[in-house]
Image 1: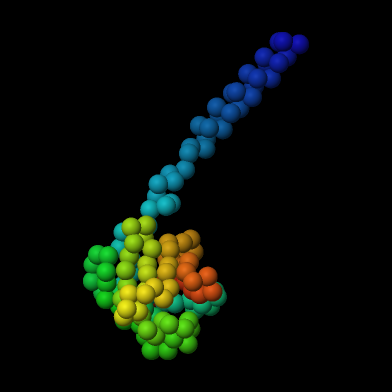
Image 2 (image 1 turned 60 degrees about the horizontal axis):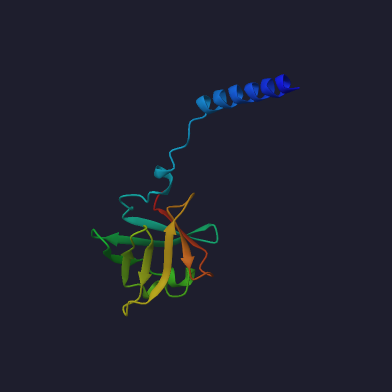
Length: 131
């Protein structure tokens, strides 16, 4: 009986070794690193549908100038009041009014460049314009 158990364990160990050699560990660092340079112009998506709303960023660094196309307030209330854009340390993007209050906050995502995370009812996403 001991011989049978040892034989089964040996076969299982050889199988696991072969599997590990054929399937290397994924490079998870590149999956969570935000893009170094965001696009200059975003298309705004609402509930999975592309809209006519575009957002253009200017400048480098944390705080950037922003230009929001007319009519964006119809896509999400408050987008027509955006006066400032700020990037956070984790790659999040905050669109703020002239008083510095956050209107909508985006975080890096899969499928889109960014998806809204605040407020919960925004259901917005950003892709590179012309994507």
